[in-house]
Length: 245
Ligand SMILES: Nc1ncnc2c1ncn2[C@@H]1O[C@H](COP(=O)(O)OP(=O)(O)O)[C@@H](O)[C@H]1O
Ligand SMILES: [Mg+2]
Figure (cartoon, helix red, strand yellow):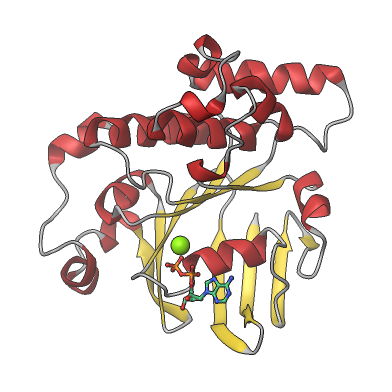
């Protein structure tokens, strides 16, 4: 569904990505992992067109999208979910959701989008008339994922969906992400919560020094010493957590 080849890019004259090649198979969840400041968010911004890559190619759903405008990329079905803090606090929950549908011209598509967002996140339906500034951190994160769903994308890019959430909420959000995938979505997910991300994902990539340093099936990676020692603090995934997902 998505293939990047030797993507190079950065900010101004500062090169951050030194040739990132990765692949996301249709219908899968792929985790993009790595330490702080290694370029994970930068890579997502390049994929969604917010930053233009300097070199390399990005093929999405059979078409080159590198250098394409962000709204065109959204129209082709690739959407980046921004973090919770990027919701507009003075607009209602529903108004914020509808912003995600700005590329949809027909009412039916907007109604379908809302129904879907509310199905995954019933709390957003309950609070649809409230200002999003009154939502909790977890609800804001749900709002942003819901907003991403509004344009009926084929694939979503999630940047740390579990950031700053209480443990119970982390489980909830990961469960819902799993459900969204089972319902036919393809997902590339950046996460600090490496263990949970690898439990949910099919495949994982670790970015370091602007290139893919390690990759493999998630199940294998979670038991891989290099990953475990660098990011998991020496612990292995708990059976209970796997069951909970
Ligand atoms: N808007 C920006 N302008 C300049 N440098 C940036 C900008 N955003 C991020 N960077 C730098 O790019 C590097 C990678 O950042 P980022 O992709 O956000 O890392 P990650 O998401 O892996 O933590 C960091 O050194 C960061 O300081
Ligand atoms: Mg980041």
